[in-house]
Image (cartoon, rainbow, N blue to C red):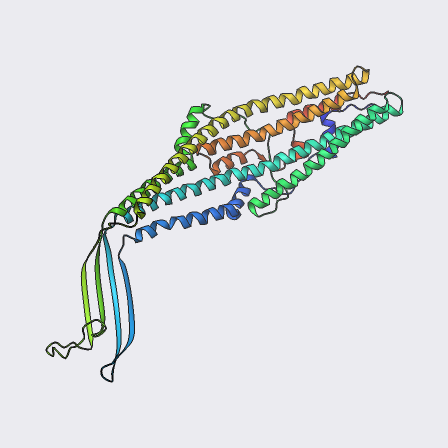
Length: 482
């Protein structure tokens, strides 16, 4: 009996069930939102970025502290012994002093600009952390759909291996009855061996993809929900590259962070220039201690002035400091700040150009993906028809087995390309939104609406209508005998 090969037959053989059979109930699977939430709670990179942000925020109160009152207190205890050479006498003095000093900056331009720079740096850190959070949204989706892509490719590889196995069996049957030579068997065997090797690689990639989920979330997953083929594949809205670029220039988080970096550099330059300006502080001081320690020693030469053992001293005043020359330090710091400002401006411009480029490229990529999905879907139908025609030609002797094997490879390549184009569309759409600064968890929620809990890659890697049509063709096709 001569068995024709088809996509439906290969899938049935690969899964070990008939198309008409009911799907086996699968365990509860993890969805995209759950993976993202686990990543938010457990991802090490996000935790490190949060710690960095919280640490960088502290520059603001640290810089503000230089403008606030400074209060300090202290004490000193001394034991002084004085020996006189001219006469055999020694004077011993014990001193005890407590003191407190309060100072309030009145004019500190450098500290003021340092505070302004710190606020800009804090805002920069906030936006960079927000960008890292946005990166995690995209990374969660990329890791999730990498698993689905790997599973669909594995399912395709299984079906391809099954198809080549059937082709090998048929070649052996034809050889046994003298309808073909040994070359056909060897060609079929080589194709089958290659398909088997490809299936083993595909299995490894599935394991690698699941391991990436573990790295992302610190949690093991046995199964995840798959993407339905009914996901709308539509151009970006609005389908205007300039509109997306304008949005990206205004909202891209890393570009906005670079604006704050420039602002911080400008304030730092002002701070360095202020190093040439005078400073003015109000200072109040209180001291209490024995009279000798505070310099109020009783003198025998003036018995009319006598200090008690303890003396209180209070003072309040202004301290003016005028910098005249510091060895060229301040001038050097100003020159350095000019270059740092230039550096930050050039970095911002480079970031802006990259954002514009990425946005335009991703906008084109999404539109290309839309056309690719439609074209790849049609390619499956065309290659299936081509395979059937080639098989018929092989049966009547107008085509050889190499033609059949090549047609099979093209069919399964079309299936892989179709599924890859679907996932490319999903991820490129998310990347476009990230470039525009609009990506949020809501985008993952929208995708989750099209996830299928009972998704079985071995059956669902094909669109349902194509799978059904292939199954109907298989059932209606008469078996030929030779």
